Image (cartoon, rainbow, N blue to C red; front, side, top):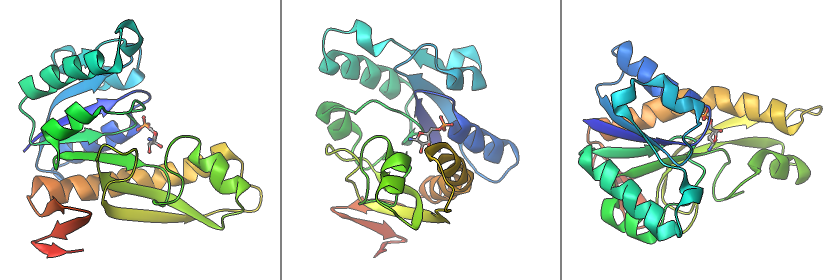
Length: 201
Ligand code: GRF
């Protein structure tokens, strides 16, 4: 299966996918890495021919950037599109075009803490447990069907960055595990639920 990976920043989740593929733990191929930020370090993790980036702020409207992204992604003919630290909201047209084949990793135990600053918000709320979710992307932000989650404890002296680092450690294996299921054709979006091997999760 062919993977397109959308990134905005560091790219440690992309690296986890690349490492799993190189180690023979994930039968898939990264056919393109796409970014709304040309300076994103994540882009440097793959050879230049696999990179596509445009500065989203240079486009007059969100829809026009999204249309350009959709054309580039479609040209790579991906089976799955993985948002791995992609910090821009995907427009309705993009989601509709690729619906059911777009995954996102979000650093919270959804449905809690959709959107940004999840670690600070979990700390401020006094959560004793926090974590990460991988879900299907739908037009509403971070609201699609959850495929899998991983949990970590919140410690008494945590700051947002220490908590983020603890969550990140469980993000990488979780994303690899879910993409492995996707690549094997074992998961599907079915309305608000996820089918694993044809049965509701
Ligand atoms: C991760 O915490 C991811 O869940 C969030 O942004 C961060 C990206 O990290 N959406 P990286 O770019 O994969 O290193």
